[in-house]
Amino acid sequence: MERKLGVSFNAYGPVPIDEQIGLLKKNGFSAVFTGAENPNLETIIPALRAADISCDNFHAPFNKINDIWYEGDDGEDMLNRLLVSVEKCEKYNVPALVVHLSAGMNPPYVNTVGHDRWTRLMESADAKGVTICYENQRKLSNLAFAFEEFPTAKFCWDCGHEFCFTPGRHYMPLFGDKLAALHIHDNSKVFNNDDHMIPYDSSIDFGFVADQIARSGYEGTLMLELIRKKTKYYSEWTAEDYYRHAGEAARRLNDEIEKAGKTI
Image (tube, rainbow, N blue to C red; front, top):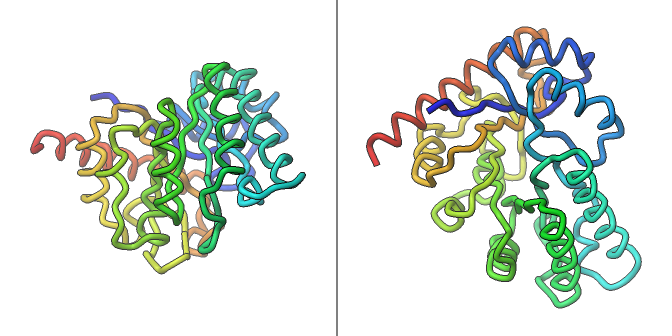
């Protein structure tokens, strides 16, 4: 199938938007995502649309996300940042918001305070026609809570997180039927060290990744979540080299997904 290929906006680092758009199109990318708190959305989104590149989702802010589980103003402030992110999805006609439920190895336990705030977020998103995609981080219990409580909640599978944050735990057999977004990237599989590298450049088994995506039946964008500066591996690469290599990797993975789908 002709699956769309996507990559995180500014994956290489700050590049003039017209130059970045040219590199995206030249290397087969027709979709991106960016942060909901990106201060340049008024410029970025129209430029992407004029170039026929979709913004599939915004990433919600996640610094201080644990506050949402606690009583007090800090928790309300965090919820308000998420609610504003939903409003930005509606404003820019971006269909989904990717959200972290917690951060770190010892986040707060699921509790009534958090339940009430997440309910408010889901009610706002549902009213505005925005899909909330919860992303796997370090705690399975948070995801199980969200998918049990909120029928419209969807899943964003981050394969890099799976291999470096929760080695040995596989999320797609549990939540693949809710898959609505992907964050695909490579890393060394060193615990708590997420490199956000181009697929096939480090240690993740992308045959496994392809099989999991194929089994889910997901037909959406194959989205790479790349951050060049997370590792020195690409320090001498030009933007041209980087996006060419990323496009080649995305096409290779898409071919593997197609091949895996034929054997299921």
